[in-house]
Image 1 (cartoon, rainbow, N blue to C red):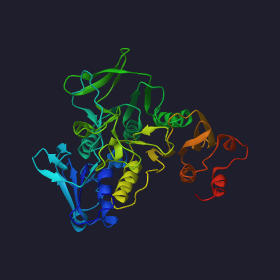
Image 2 (image 1 turned 45 degrees about the horizontal axis):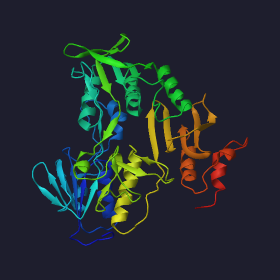
Image 3 (image 1 turned 30 degrees about the vertical axis):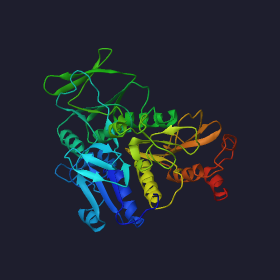
Image 4 (image 1 turned 135 degrees about the vertical axis):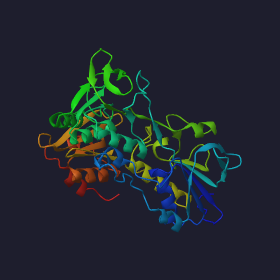
Length: 416
């Protein structure tokens, strides 16, 4: 069926976030003539999420926080049927999605772009007013409104979202604290040199960092007044944002009998165990190019690249997915850009000057470059993506040479 372009062919896309929207747009860009149905479980136009934890929180109250991918006219012009609803089940035998409303959407191809949901921190006091999470536009609007009057803000979780929110709150002049059971910020993702840079950055701006601490409860009667640690100590708060990770939304896939394991399992072409059904973005777990790992990546780039790949695959470009992952975060005046995956890295080399806050950390696994973290070094980031996408890669012994220069090395690489 791959490559079908006939007008009667229908692609149903579940999820109208970055991956879902991009899949619909890319199909039209590739001259797909069939019907496209894009189903989202939030009313209104599909919108971008990254700004919600960054600049959007600094926007004045009353201003529109939404950042739609495209205006309504775009969907009409490109004949993308945008539906608001929630899928109840997938009928694989009859090739249909059944919505909770009872409506049936028949498909030739189904793309699961279901994303992920926030993990819930089930502690005493979690239902107090002022304890918030950030995932949707409505969440961001609630947090921004609360920031108008809050004086003591606590971020529970020192991942990317927690640290970005902490940066925004500190910029607004709030007394801001971050709590995490690990010993440094973004520890699950970053090397120690990069992580320590952001710890210093936040501390210099006045953020209070409580690492190695486990929360036991949220204090208060009707509204939150503080966060208590397991050791009995506490920190005052009138606004708490909980960011302790996400879980892939896999219930529909599992109920339909598709393979699921920390995400919807897909092959190198992003097909599920049913070849008519694809999974992309935050909900998909896929094999990496080196063949050693299966990963699930939560990033805009991954969602976008996988959406474009599936659109190409459906319209006849039958290859294997092999994009180099990349990520970014902006906190105060430091921009972090990451190329590649740090899974299993065992050696780190620092290029540049950590004191001046412009450096890159090269991470290796089994003596081969797998990831580069760049802080305020955009040229290094672009170069790293080129190297990681080249068959030659970068061996550890070469990078350890005294005169090694990342840009020069990339310039001397034979084009792949």
